[in-house]
Length: 112
Length: 114
Image (cartoon, rainbow over all chains, first blue to last red; front, side, top):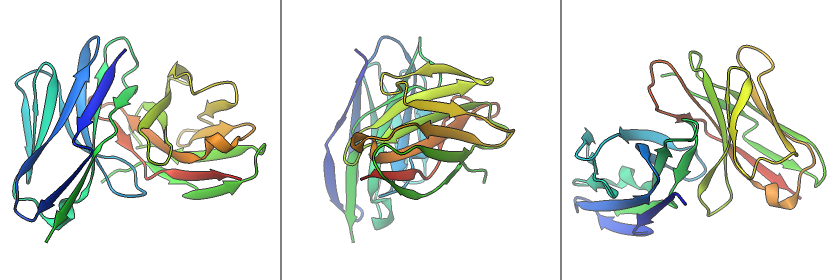
């Protein structure tokens, strides 16, 4: 069974304290791995798509990396406005392109 | 920036009533989806829709659910006879030409069944 596990469930950082979020996956065939940001009561906001091991993408203070078993979302010098739940999702071969399998997310709190 | 819009943002309904959730996907997108998120749980795939037909559906998407694209802009999710366990946030999403595999989500419709 295709599965996505995110850790930690929750992470509290001080402003400026860099850290990483983990997304490990067990799938039959990875078509793409997505990172989204979700604010309370809102829809997932697209951040990155990664397709192959070794790929990296960056956006402001965020950097996503991918290996054959997991992905990391690195947050450099976070600010309070980075506080949100970060969701990882995989798209597998054999399913429709819209069938994303989500993890439970990591709730990030950044204190000033 | 183009976005997926959903209405209503919140709906309260009696158990057994029919509910229709509406979505306007991004205009040049061809693939449309519904997801749901029960409070405190994962986002779960319900259905994907392309070329006026369902291309994939999950086990959750049983006979009480249906989807429709009644015109060139709207995409709807109908729940025929709501149950208490249908209470959740329902997200519409879309993807298509120019966005690669990227799936863009709306802000959600929060459904409360009482």
